[in-house]
Amino acid sequence: MGKLLLAPMEGLVDDILRDVLTRVGAYDLAVSEFIRVSGSLLPARAFHRVCPELTRGSRTRAGTPVAVQLLGSDPGCLAENAAQLASLSPAGIDLNFGCPAPTVNRHGGGAMLLADPEQLFRIASAVRRVVPAEIPFTAKMRLGMRDTSRTLDCARALAAGGVVSLVVHARTRAEGYRPPAHWEWVARIDEVVQFPVTANGEVWTTDDHVRCCSLSGCPDVMIGRGAVADPFLARRIRALAAGEELASDRSSDWRRLQPLLASFWLQVCAKVSPRHAPGRLKLWLGALRRTFVEADVLFLAVRELRGADDVTRMLDRHGVLRLPAPA
Ligand SMILES: Cc1cc2nc3c(=O)[nH]c(=O)nc-3n(C[C@H](O)[C@H](O)[C@H](O)COP(=O)(O)O)c2cc1C
Image (cartoon, rainbow, N blue to C red; front, side, top):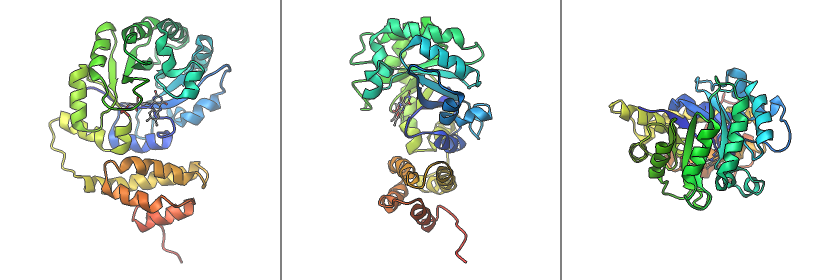
């Protein structure tokens, strides 16, 4: 089967969730959330903050390589920062041409650039010049701003600019995150470029994965929200492709997830202030509710809690943590 990539998700998947999800899911590659580049050369610590994996050979604890994503609109500034990033030996350098956020788009970054294939070319070729051949230089794009009239021009511009592969989130900016994703458009892009194209968008189940590969004609798939909602999805996709019958049901998966939920929470408490830690757990539990009824119960139990200690006690009460009994 093809590759499975864990999608970048700013504000949702950071190094902690990458750690947990790649321990369960056996992804071939993860991409960091975007690092915004505008006007100045970022210090090394700015790259390390978003991708602490850089200090471990740019891999998660499970060994999954992590590429680092940059977002910006100025070719010179992006190139300067890409050179700085390259000196930290990331597993890849990826450029974001899909972010729909108004604050990012107002500065001409993310999906806005899809209206201007010539600028895409200028950016990609400027960055290409500074990224050594041994570091994969890639891009991630949506189909366009409002429509698909320039989709193929954008893909060709990135190819001419020297990227070695492309992830296509198969929706326009205007379509936001609403289904469907137009996987057949990934096939059209694949026809006009010479390198591997990865399909992305709306893969939540093993069936979605099969249909996505078939309609896009691409074996490689990047999974975003589906990976967060169902940490076992990648494993199930692989088992199905290998012809194995995966002897698991939702409630045994939930039990298997408990040590990882505990690990997630402990890592969050070590990294984030006690005031902000509960929000991080609620965000993941909110996504897990889509897959597990038990996550719904836990989500409702912690929803109103504000302090990290209260959340820890609640997780213990639900059997997620094994706290030492009080003396
Ligand atoms: C909360 C959130 C944050 C995201 N952040 C990024 C990002 O930093 N860089 C990026 O290229 N895409 C980002 N995306 C888009 C995802 O990588 C992916 O393309 C999109 O969610 C579609 O895939 P899915 O349907 O499997 O979720 C984000 C998506 C979400 C929902």
